[in-house]
Length: 104
Image 1 (cartoon, rainbow, N blue to C red):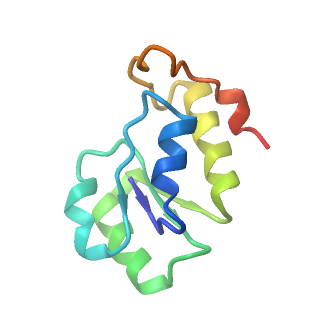
Image 2: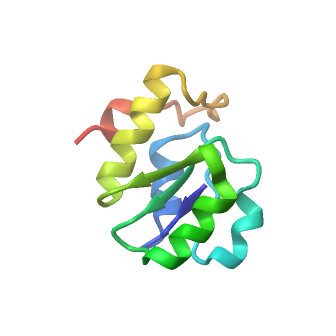
């Protein structure tokens, strides 16, 4: 799950990481939708402390703050994939992952 979805990160993340299911929320009121996410990322650059705290409380150990922008988030996702911390599902034909492009 990604909280702090500025400039519609969702579309770009799904394009760059086929096989990863992203749930992006823009308000802590939607925190229920991240219940089944492996990781819950808060883009601290775009989110104030109070809403981030609510998401952190709901996420528990799955909470990961990202101190930066979209390139920092992509770098972290690529690290998780490379380490096996998250596992992509099979990508649709023609959309095979090229996770190296996520590296700045």
